[in-house]
Image (cartoon, rainbow, N blue to C red; front, side, top):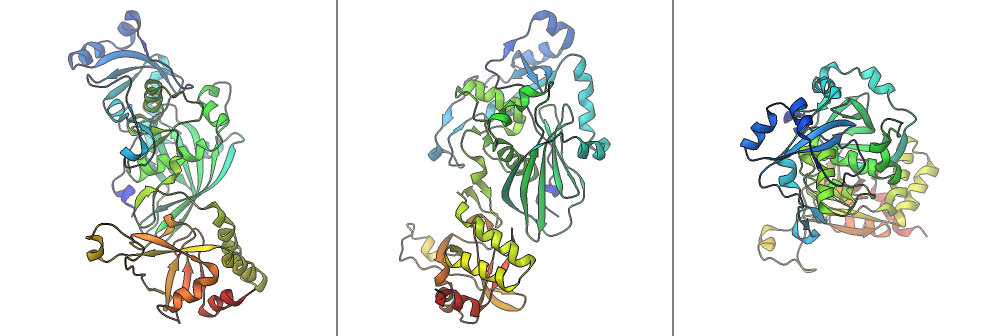
Length: 419
């Protein structure tokens, strides 16, 4: 099974409001009636607070650790592993606590019993959703993934739950059991792909939380991708901010905590979908190549119905584009330090259904073999590239998906000769 099923982690968070500007101290009467002895206990431990917040429309209070800064620093992209400009909220999110208050707080416990979720109600709770197409890949082990809860809460600071039913991931808010997103997922050997995200539009009651999605259509895709990476793969990742968030670090920290809780440690305005866990396990920031999307579409069409016309369209797309080949560098060369154009590299010959081949990719994040980098080869030069190593070898494009096809040696020669 998947690593994220073996080490299931539960968690999430959200802010039911638009970007909060400042947490307000709670009045003594509110403290006495709602929190009882919690305040004295937290102060004895050195915590700051309590401060008033609203989370998913529920009144709450927050306590911050003694060393938590209310104005955490910005970190430049060249000074962190995500290669994005982030606010360092790690201590803010890891050493702060949420406490729900008021009548609505009594219902929060229902979201902690994931097995009681009514999946039919979940399926029916999308109210004319806004949808965004996408293509996000993630590695996975072989084996069937059972329907049901995949991630959920362990503490009040875990505000998201994820469920899988009938080929969809459902992302709910733990405090309210409210469905936020539904993602279409496709499973393949060694990979899974999210191809569409449907997001509930605002209603009269939740228009405040939905505001970021109304003003930033791609925010839902970034958020779904972030939740998959952090909750299903346990991968520390930059947390997406909506484009209407203020740039003041203190306000961002409060938003990140009330929106993402313990996992909101590294909020950023950058495109967080560029921080990938590649199909071969390599992590880093990779910019996708949108120019190759027509090629992926042509592969899909040719695999569904491999008639002559569709195969020709596939050839036309390949001939005018480039494909990527993953390469390795000998250990002795790596030990020398700097890599140059003269550094020797090697490409792995594979076996595909009993035939020798080389794997090629439309996007560097789809590579499956261990590698140190990728070489770009023009479609017309594929035959020459392969013949250096084995003139009888084929090319398999995107062996783990999102769409896969094989080019026989005769096709490679035809690509080189077609006008």
